[in-house]
Length: 313
Image 1 (tube, helix red, strand yellow):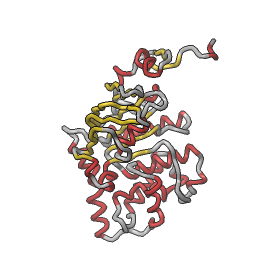
Image 2: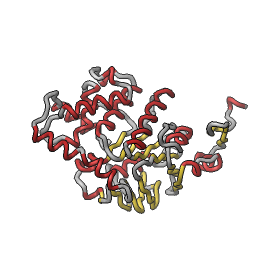
Image 3: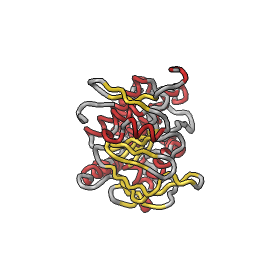
Image 4: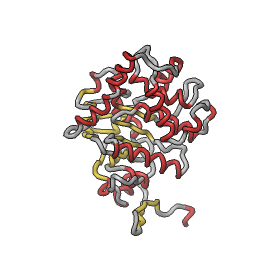
């Protein structure tokens, strides 16, 4: 896969947006700027240290839903430059696994490490400086402009009573631009369409600028053109800025274009993992989704489609 050509938080919205009321357009003091400078080096330090070590790692991870083991003894390493797609039918535990990797959901057994340190022993703010999560559902606790919402992504890098700096505001504006919302920066988040709200949620995680992003169906509510634009942006971030991401997806064809590796979940604890080129075959996908899936190829690419269906009878 050509990494120069695009192929295809830590943020808790219920709590992080609570800091919006403290948002101000005034620059920080010089002392606050120094604190921000130190904090903003966390992601870069993680990337640099990941030359030989994974940034995010889990060992013997076991996760259950309602007493049913959905992930059993998972070993996974996520390093700079990787974009790992999680595939599987509805209800197999894709979201549950992402939440466990983020440290916001309990696990039955195993460890999750961020930059070589057990996340269970790390302060939440420190985790948030290196790991961001986009949840499946976008909710806004109260009314705020799109820019203010995006600025909440800078919360982990700002002191408890601190104010955002001009650099923070620039970062938030750049995040809005990356998702195509820069023209709507001053619009109320509640006046945005469902797709625009989804992009705003992603902009908040981008403004956070973590080394690792866990993305739960980031293309929900987006039209095909927006899906490609967003995933192109994420791909470039991973490969040009040496970040990494784990993405839960339902569209297999997006995974073929935008994932370096694929993790398949079967819902009964079983899982399979490997490079995308070897994992995504019609045979494997048919077994995963329990329906006949066919591969259709031309000289440029291979796409997968469900065979049959009443409409094709």
